[in-house]
Length: 155
Image 1 (tube, one colour):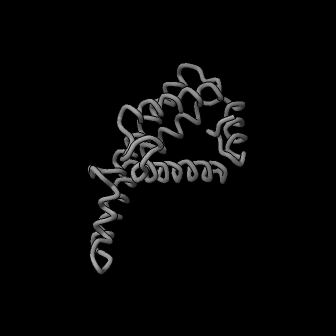
Image 2 (cartoon, rainbow, N blue to C red):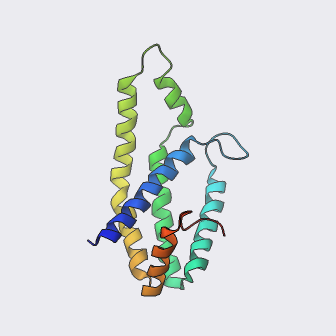
């Protein structure tokens, strides 16, 4: 595998993990708690529209982008887990006079398992989407990723 492809996949995978973790633990801008399914759907739609617009995607490419978005959303859902309040999990770990190492390790293993289980599908969807792009679109992705703000930044 070419080094730039590895870096791209690693970067996107890492961004997925960070985004999932931040979304799970964030309080959002105007509400408390994790994003609702409706808000996630709205954000996802905006991201898909923005990527489609920036890359001038055809229908087949848009379909592959939607598959990628589905896989990333499933990855996020698995990563967040069934906990109603991720902050409560962390608070429980540090609630006593000693750090609950066993509980922290269990939480880490649960999150790692979720990432490992869904990652092959995310990578396959990402590769299918990227491979469906023509050379000009692929170059645009590389150029946008080189910008300091990242390729999804406004402006």
